[in-house]
Amino acid sequence: MAVVVEQTIPFSEPSLDLHNSQRWNQLLPLIRPSLKVVRTAKDHTLLVDVALVKSTFVHIAAVGTTGAFSSKLLDDRNVTAIVTGQTGAGLPTPSDIRDAMQSAGAVKDQAVVVARAGKKRRVEMHGKDLVEVEAGGELELDHILHLLANATKSCRKSIQDVTELLKVFMENSSTAHSKFHVEKAGGKPAVLQAEGATGFENARHAVERDLKHAMKAHSAQEGDATYSVHYSDVNGLSRLENYIIAGEIAQYLDSQSIPYRLSHSTIVDHSDAARGFSISICPIPTRYLAAQPKPHEHKATSTQDDMALQQTLSQSKPHIAFHDAEIRKRIQSGCAAVISAEPTITEYDTIVGDGDCGYTLRDGAKQILSFIQTRDLTRLPETLAQLVSELEVNMGGTSGALYCIYLTALASALATESTVAGALKAALGQLMKYTRARLGDRTMMDALIPFVKTLERTGDVGQAVERMKEGVEGTKTMEASLGRSAYLDESATRGVPDPGAYGLLVLLRGMAEV
Image (cartoon, rainbow, N blue to C red; front, side):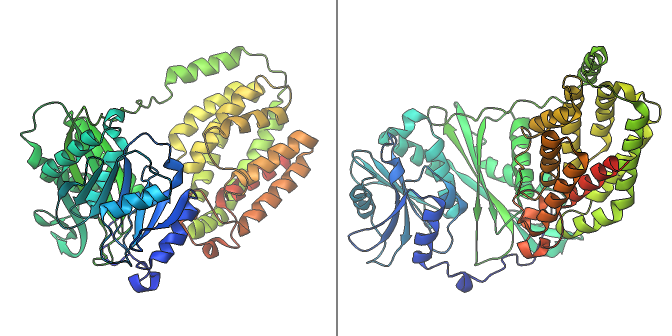
């Protein structure tokens, strides 16, 4: 987990013009086209989601803190209305908000909860079908929005149950905060937590300290409860860092046999540009909130599975005749080309990626050359399946995983298809089930797809290589939508081919030119 202690917000608050409600009125409908701009009788601005008009649940209206809208407000599809402008006379009242929602046709007879961030916690009834809840800041507001969206269906349909749920939250929720600091503690980057500044060791220790601090308030918890846990990254932790935090939270709660439901949001705080994360925890009666189901445990492909596949392939009678000398020569030529091109691939990946693609492909090529020395390539499907078993262990990176998936599918396809082109196409179909990458995403698929489709259509390897080359050239001007390059500005990748696509071109061109 990276620790960045300097300011990480690239633009100042005034330059972003975040307090301009008109900016949000234009932006949010682009994200959610069903949002409609509505004004209250006192000239406050609301964005109302008319797509939720048929909802049978209690409607949610959120009053965002102008200039600091969290990702929860931007992304949550269960929020019916968002208050973006406060240009009218004072703050909009709950009645003002509900009346505007009704005028937009989003609310008929359903009850409404108006949630806002403030400085104190309170739940207040405004009649039998209108409730106002004020949270102690953006973190708690995001947590409440998560609760209201994920409570049991019976709870979400009853304003009485929703009110009781909110009261439970106000009485029992606790928080903990971590902020990376410019100072050092014990010679390590400091993390400011409840106990003061401590040296950052790893993500697990930092998360556990916050969880233990927040859980102290619930040591006497009795009765059946689901722990609602919401964490917010503050001022832009990366997606990977967020996954790590979520994983550490889940592992800690699992180790304590605590049933939970976990959620996340991103908060921008221009008043303090330091990065960090905050956690909010509240035990909720199970009648209001059910624990999230446990994910299925991952079961790695076992040696028995590998042996079963290899045995099946060894007993098959392929329709294609495989000639050892020809196949060996093509493989050796392709792998030699990849090894020779490693510096170029590494250079490209240093610019647009993590810098390891060249090494990954080079090491994979060396392993293949070593593997085939004593293998009978006339039994190519079986041999290929055996090769994948070794590559899975020793060939890392995203490209390594994709190659292993593709080669596994290719081994099976070579045993059943009548042509190599047909087998390559069948394997491509299998690979596309495991990756969202397609043509135009600036990945190795921009090389593989044109090659396979052209070869299957024409049977001409030379023409297939040319189409693949054109695909790789095209990546020089593409904006990446997947992978490490997606985090970079388009100008940083312009003129540089995708390293994975280029590496695959080198391999297949080397195999084809024998």
